[in-house]
Image (cartoon, rainbow, N blue to C red; front, side, top):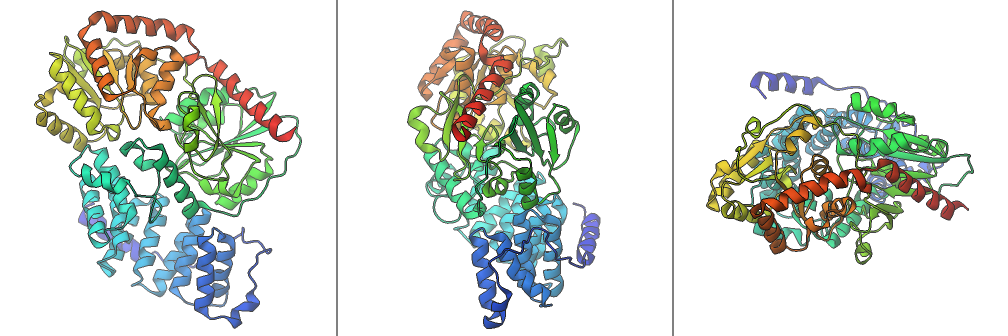
Length: 616
């Protein structure tokens, strides 16, 4: 940010003080809080009780305690700051912002209030103002570790990755037990393929998010294939962050089964939107009444597509969690499907309160959410075999084929493309991996470099996630005595053009801890065979599920050595890659893999059976 812009933003920040309207609609009268106890207890005792209720997930009751002080005209900045945090946790971000600004108005030197305000501004999408809030907190309290970590998250969101790393490291210098900073540092260094601290990170992973403070589990999926650790992190995260007073939902008989899908991902190019659209369009509307509860950060033309799929569309972006819950309950859902888990913009509290008698984890979060209010997870026999069911808090529902919908209508551009158009050699074997660079670890990269050394004139075609990952991967290639120019990086393209260029590759190489999902599906649709190594976690078994469904099980390997040997064999034998591509072309027309009509029937049968089991 330029100095001129920063000064202007700081000036706006300083004067942006509003009167605070404290009248939450969701604070019901049937609370256990009794204002008559206030005179009998000290202010500190009442604040401590509010903090206890907050930690237990009783947000409405905790809010009543702070509301009592505010109504009495008390000018205590802690009350306004704590109340703002509760409002945030209830989903009332605008009111939360006002409450934090009131705390700062009362006490401008209140570092924690500045930091809390920064978090709310970040959730509102005001990243530059959030940055200023965190910097102000650090200015007031230079040893404020969590503010440095929060500032690192903002720098990461703004794309300033080197600055972000420095801020996370500073946070850990000030507090070497700060779990969130450790997690963020592992994630960001993974995203730029900087493996210099791998030994330290491996030690951290043994207890990170399992002991000490809970952290979001999704960000560490790419760091280890350990489903037990994934489950432990999810359980702890849910218990500490999203426990709410849950309500049993009474079933009401209807002519159609009411199903609600909840996501922030009805938006541009998101894989969930691409995968789920055929199901929503093909649902039998004579048997099912489908509700879509949408809360993207911004709507776009893809959101409009979702609105036109013949479902009841609910825009709940401006509703807080309580209001969203009440709306969903008024729709009398029989089955609620969370398409997000703990991915970005999720609203897990909606499911914590419970909005339907049956609640399902599906598609967006490829793992267990560790919640006692999510009853089921949809998978298949490959992604969650019987022996792995112990790693999931949910009951397992298995689709007969692949759990992912694979659209058979994805358009492939007819525009003629040549290798030279993408800086690929006209001759020589092209290994490809279009998975995000954050999925690449030393293990698969070592194998890939061995392949380039052994297969003369071969190249590795990778997706370019960011410039630092390009620099680091080329450095890693040099360390392994491979010409860095044999790594060729591809820019993002519209899907139909991307599908066309995929056909120029010879063999797709999958990543281990997180497989390609939509990435592998796209490659297969484009006619590019993909080699995978099956792991233990749900997310490390995705490609194996896709290959099993389409009928290319010979491309599933079970160890790193087998993965390398098979890739070497395929690349050394031109007839083998021709055979695989020819087989794939035939299978696309005959296997159930791209039969979205069949997949829709399969998932509808699952819903019907659940309905009968629960309500008959």
